[in-house]
Image 1 (cartoon, rainbow, N blue to C red):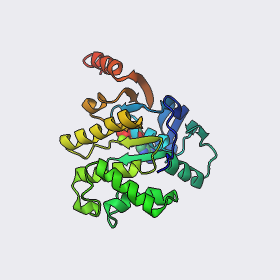
Image 2 (tube, protein in one colour; image 1 turned 180 degrees about the vertical axis):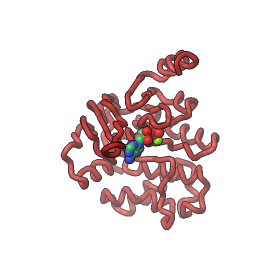
Image 3 (cartoon, rainbow, N blue to C red; image 1 turned 45 degrees about the horizontal axis):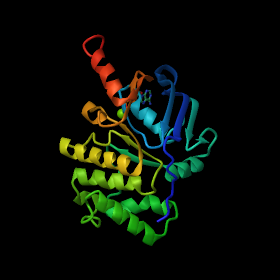
Image 4 (cartoon, protein in one colour; image 1 turned 30 degrees about the vertical axis):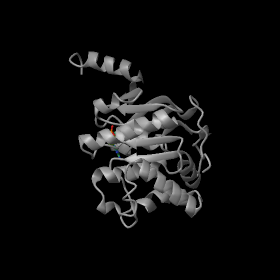
Length: 252
Ligand SMILES: Nc1ncnc2c1ncn2[C@@H]1O[C@H](COP(=O)(O)OP(=O)(O)O)[C@@H](O)[C@H]1O
Ligand SMILES: [Mg+2]
């Protein structure tokens, strides 16, 4: 199977420049993101943490070109998304990004295998190749014996693994997860992170994941901390954790 996206470690894959996003209008207008500068590089395993309402989901939508900024720039794989038409954005997303959300949004009327094949169809990959890759991904995620079941006949943890396989289908440059374990018990959340760690280690997969669970964030390599629409800390996980610990009990 052809390598769809080149993996060049350290290369910027998503860049945000003075990113701003205002939601709502008039009296309810709310500047949710207030000027963010961030570079996500190939091979990084990042978590985004911060209090509820700090703008994490808004940021993820913009990182994934699912939403448009009110100001500033989003560059994905070097492409400035400003001025792109919806179709161009959709094509860029499908080619470069994989999404995993808290609720998996699998299509209930299709099998696990077909759900994973769907993004490959959108890219025009041949059916036989799509079946082979989807089968391989589901096997690697430990559900190779359940590929023909619809999501409704899988457990919550299994459904989230199908969603991960789907996110990986087109060998995305970046996997984006917004609370991908938010709906799972500790053991299944642990499994999902074990899968992420393996992908990062063995395939240099770039992963950016929002989590409110600091034990899970501690397993990533870089923590980006948001408070009230601004990045207040960003660095190697151990350093950010240390600064967060120091802050607890003082002013937080
Ligand atoms: N349509 C909207 N109009 C105004 N404010 C909004 C709208 N949607 C979300 N918000 C606000 O944006 C802020 C950030 O939301 P969100 O990005 O979902 O935060 P998080 O994911 O960190 O919990 C919240 O304060 C939320 O109330
Ligand atoms: Mg959120």
